Length: 317
Image 1 (cartoon, one colour):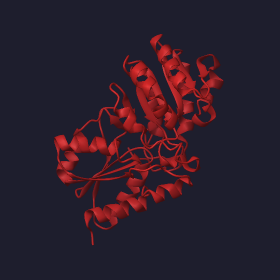
Image 2 (cartoon, one colour; image 1 turned 45 degrees about the horizontal axis):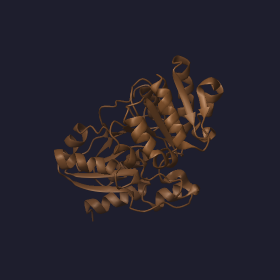
Image 3 (cartoon, rainbow, N blue to C red; image 1 turned 135 degrees about the vertical axis):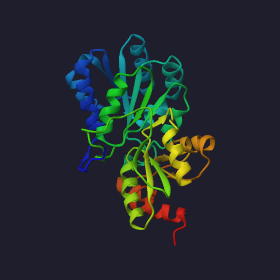
Image 4 (spheres, rainbow, N blue to C red; image 1 turned 135 degrees about the horizontal axis):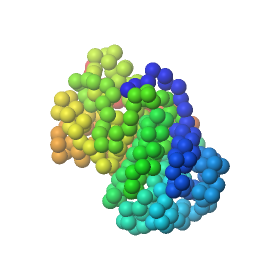
């Protein structure tokens, strides 16, 4: 399942190319953007199928209601902009127009998390997953590399109902072998087997977690590593089985520790397998401007920082 080739690639570029591929197969796919198509890479679809692409301008709320109208007419709609603008700015339209009517709109938001970088706090969506997972009938998916982005976008195109798919600005190193890995929306994925603790992650922090697990191995700590691309609906089995075995759980996410993957894990464990949980993410604070890797380091999301935090959590002397 895991790839030996760890070259980095742009998930936004993969998204744009996948839309073009799917558009050739399905004439009912339409794509909307809020004047950021070169950043979200929906410009590729616009060039291939200009009659099915709509630039709604810097009017994100209007884009979501337009998406709802097109979906009501039978179209499969992909609507894209930056995660900050796609969620907080459009919450009323997403809740009351798209999700309340269970419309076939796929909100694919790029530039999620702290790694938006120099654009700073106003553009760094640290609460978007929390917003989206609180709305009834919304599926929330956070893919971890381009292999998974391709699978998730195809799944979205062929599955009815509203979805929120979060893609980062950064290039992602390849984790999954495209010849073997297939996205399964109904399960968490175990990527490494261990007995001492469980580490849960998704998105761009998953690669960092896998590297941190190798460091932990060097000091005799063996970790179960679970990938949970689907934050909602949350499927409990893999987490429950692992937590019962290890008794200690760490969650790592490029999101606020409030309301995201860590909250989903705690909610699940409180019901199915009470365990000690340590959440590594952005604390209750806004982000700041800075280079992407420096921000990951500052907020403790690099492999070395994750390793150091887990060592303290495990109380290893």
